[in-house]
Length: 298
Image 1 (cartoon, one colour):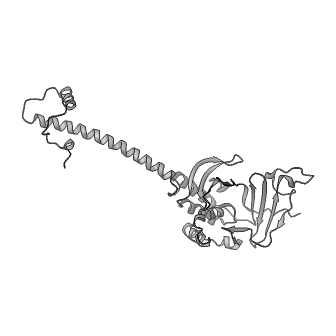
Image 2: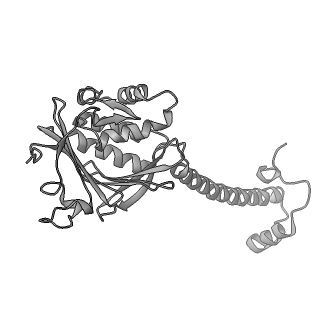
């Protein structure tokens, strides 16, 4: 049925009292000439149309804003546009990195335990652990952020590989041979996970950013793959426990806990990782990457 408010024909019923008042205020008494009522009615219809378009425009803006908020907050959507741009910028930085003789990482666990690891291309690896109680009489209580050198013994890693993914050992060579294409990397990593471990994909990809000796192109691909995962949520700017500024992202673990990573897009480095709820485990990355400096084995 046609909407009488949008018809150009005059209505069969009289105008409303408000419309008549508006007509008299705007136009005076209608002229007693043929078609005068039709001309006035057309003006009233035009005014109604303008009011309706104004209301529709306001509704459209509100709906667009609601959709934008939903895209940011719902876990089933990829990271919001600013977050995705940050991950892609970090990928570009990561791709320009270089490899050296040793891969090295120093991590502070839960604020009271430092571990360091060195690895070489031929599969050799060394590690050390430092706690506030492990200082020597000469060094006193160590500052954990200063590293193991001269404070804790650095020993070879024997037996299992120092690298793993979802509980499965990874060799240095396997990591080096991962594909540098984001889609292919995502597929390869998913295939390496145990059956029923689809919820670990984001965590497995993020591990390639900082806890494994990934080549620069693989780190870049991991960032790009994470940018397209629907479970990765951008949380905004945030400082790590040492006060270093970064950008925070989170993703769920199969346990129901959300893990948050703080990254520095300018360097592509992961600064810290924390788990919300449960044990609240945290790791602060003091340094991670390639170096020509060998571990001090003396």
